[in-house]
Amino acid sequence: QNWIALFAFLVTAVTASQLSERARREARSAIERRQEVERLYGFSQLLLSSDNPAELLNLIPRYIVESFAIRSAAISLSSRSDVYRSGPNIDGLETRDLQLICLRGEPRIDPANQLGFMPLRMGTRVVGSLGVSGSALSRQTLEAIGSLVAISIERAGAVEKLSRAEAARESEQLRSVLLDSVTHEFRSPLTAIKASVTTLLGSAGQASSSHSPEEQQELLTIINEESDRLNRLIGEAAEMAQLDANKVEFRFASTPIAPVVEEALEELKQLLLRHPVDVRIPAGLPPARMDPPHIREVLVHLVENAAKYSPADAPIRITAEAKDGDQMLTINIADRGPGIDDFEQSLVFEKFYRGRNQRVQVHGTGMGLAICKAIVEAHGGRLGVTSQLGHGSVFYFSLPLG
Image (cartoon, rainbow, N blue to C red; front, side):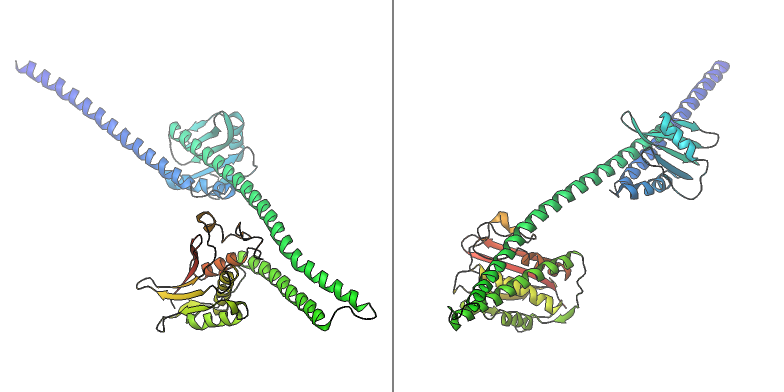
């Protein structure tokens, strides 16, 4: 009985030991697979960090080294002659071997030298090859890495092509809008100038002028005003180009808003003769961080628009406030114009866009609000509008307190 008990105990112990060892191996294998999945997930997230194919190709080998703790990595593409490496050392990842893998489309694993080569596939198409050195990664892991790399390269290329197509489309659209806007707005003052000059030259060639001094003065006034308008159009186009290229220098200073508003209204004195302006700026309002000449330009554009789009004798109200804890100064310009519908409120700040119902009635290029937006955003503020059809609009912009 003792021998039988001893034999049964030994069999039970050996069986339990084997089952325990098997469970440990499976647990260790599961942990390793989990770690590989986590590394692959982290690696896939890194691949999304750039949409530039050239930049991504230079980053991928380094990402592989960092994510999978290997010595070095290299990538070769069938469409490019360069080899992208994680560092200056080749570590057995010869260019010839990478090119052969790319041509044959078959992986090669060398456990003795800790080398692995894997083709980069997109479906059945081989787009390149991947080589790793200094780690015994499994074939399945290398295939997963190769698939992720191929997908990321194709994705970056597709994004780049889409960006180029979108840029070309926007460029064509901008060119069309620019030609339409500038051609119309330049032609009007040029036509007026040409007509006035032709009239004056015709009367000057006659023995006795058919135009009285008052009529001649009126024609000269037209030439002067239209020349100023033409000069302003060119100035706005040049300023918009400088703002887009970030070539405008701002001189920020802590400045009260009230004097800047007064200067803007003084500049628009003639335009505002038929529009009463109600300025409500509290006396204790804190100063804001601004470039006074450029903020005066913003106010001139906004108040001028309020006057141009409002009926005669309609009031314009200018207010300013600084909410507690907001650290921003907000300036509002309210008018009694026709208002802007919800669809156009998101478009009025785009370059060359003009209201559908106001393009013929009011002259302009559609650059004023785009210039204002660029200036306000350069100050760290925001330009916006709230409007209701038939009840006017309120344009507002914010500036950080000084």
